[in-house]
Each structure stands twice: as C-alpha cells, then as structure tokens.
Length: 180
Image (cartoon, rainbow, N blue to C red):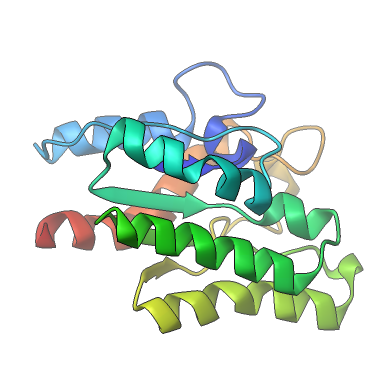
C-alpha cells in the first residue's frame, strides 16, 4: 500500500503514468505477486494520514506500507515535533498491524531556512533508525533541483520524472520484496 500525498497520487499527470502505476508494471516484470493499493491523497498532511491510517490498514491489510508523507506539512511550516510525532504514530500503527514499512524522505527548498530544513529532513532518518525501517532518503533524489522535471507549478514532478521516482523507491523496495 502506497500511503502518500500528491507526489504518489499522480497530481497533474495523465492517468496511469505516475510512479505508483509504473511500480505495478515493475512488479509484474519481476513476477512478484503483489497487489498495489494507492491510498495517496493530494494535499495530505501527516495529521490527515494519521487520522485515516487505521481505516486504511483494516481495509487493505497490506504486507508493506510505503509511507510518503510530510512534504505538505513542511511546505506549510508546521512544527517539526508535530510532523515527527504524526509520522511516528503512523509507523507504529503499521507495525501493530504487522505491516513492514518503507519510509520515504523528503526535503524542503532552501527558502524555508537552514535550521527548519535540516530539522525537517532529519525526521525521516530519526524515525527510520529508531524503528529499524527501510528508508528512501529523498524521493526526488537525482532531479529535485532540475526544473525540467517539474510541472508548471514547480512543485509536482512531471511525467518525465516518474521513472526517476520509481527508481529511487525501487532501490530499497526490491530488497523488501525479496526478503518477504
């Protein structure tokens, strides 16, 4: 189950061209017997994700949850502690439901200030370390600073970026699938 925001929901992209749809194709190529549930919602915050995680876990019973949340919190300048606590509570809910977790990290543009951006990106490493989770350090690694990979809003990756996102996730996810 992919549990994220617009970056995983495919905001502004033609249907079935987002990285989550591409993941389904990748798994078929690997002959992995997984059903992908995309429970991502554009605009989702960690608080919104926390408020609906139990229902999503009970409805879908995932073996693996890819948690890709926090970008909207950071862009709104929400308190680091609340972002951290909400993500940690989501992780704990997944663990209680016997799901393995792949945590996906994000970074903020530098205009949010050095102190805030460092604390924000450290959240993901802290939670991954504390809970011994697999971590994708930065979803947009390798292209996050290249405007040609973004839609006109300069926030959402375009169609050309989706394979790069998939590769960033797949580097870690395939190890989880092999060990399952």
